[in-house]
Length: 240
Length: 290
Image (tube, rainbow over all chains, first blue to last red; front, side):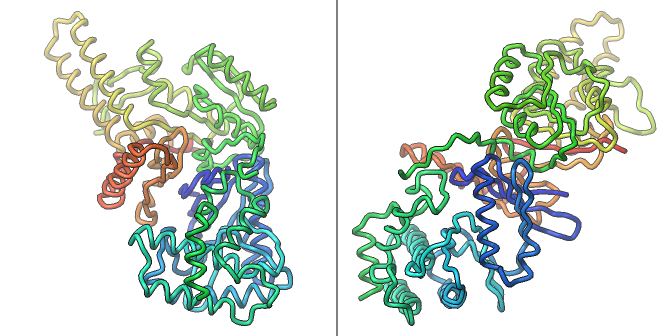
């Protein structure tokens, strides 16, 4: 079997991700390199179990508990977007993801948070949307519905503004549209969507331990290191 | 608390060993023990690991680390590489920083690594071979089907080539012989073979084949074989996409500029032109023929 090392010890997670080529089969393997890595891999498996609980896909995701744990994940068919994806050009995909989130997250009895939802963690084809990288998965209250999408939108804003130094009016209108799409039908007890970006940051900082992050949280999530003024600005854009 | 504290030892620098995979029944030997993390990592996943270390100081340092890590399934031997120490055969051989080790040893005693440096006559139209005594020792110690893992920094290929050429020239001038012309032809041949075996990937592969290994896989390693962040199998280049490794240092403007330039340069060399022969390091895996 031939392997390619894709990433290693990203944000000090003590885990390496390999792409493995075995005859005609291609799959991914995550391997821990410490007891911390074991904990994260076990947590990731729980995330897959939550997400694929009624799906045959779950049988293809295998956790091997050696001294250092290994998690095998099949290669899902579909389009994968780069980690530095921006809003422009991906509007349709983002819209589909929000619909998908509303459908899957509101119908699941036990509410959970993916923790690192970003465009690069989706594998999308015409019919299906698959979600990978569940390292930061955790159970949470339903009142935090929307956290993952807000986090994803902020990552997109971050990359968009890195490229163009500012957001266009078209981008801002699109963000507003995404917000409207997300809050439609949401319970009044929701603690996230009144001031989405500020509340998402507060959630991240108040419940840091739930995210199983083994580095400074400010380095891992762009949302956590963004100043209040910036978050207020984007909150006003989407909620106006 | 925003920065979690933990007491776990992170052995991520051993990620290269994930390419071969260990079995809990494996008995492994590590020549040189150049990477302590690799040694500890292997001990966790195999039945037993033996470390062969020529340097006594290094052996002491490793011993202390092994006590700290509570590693018990290991033996350390203070010896040279070319000595056959064990009656048992190994399932796997690890040689980290192979060329660095070769360089040090050749400087100390070139006879350790070479026997019949150049065979005098061509046989069956095959190329003349250089044989490395070290490889022969490894071959003898491996069980049939046993695995070889070898890593090295690319820049050492040039250094070691220059050293070999220097040694060959020195031996040409010091040798007492009336047949200088014949010796000169041997010298030219030797330099040609050093160039071929050490500078070309194909040559290096042939060197391993000559020494009895099969299923040879070569990998380009970024940024360094001592802590790989990206490893690409050269036989799967069409299916692999290259993105430069992200260097996490954010401190200092100059450093960030340097990292940015390096990233762009890497993108050009490896992504656009796919000159993977220029990769900073390589890993080679192979198997002893059954």
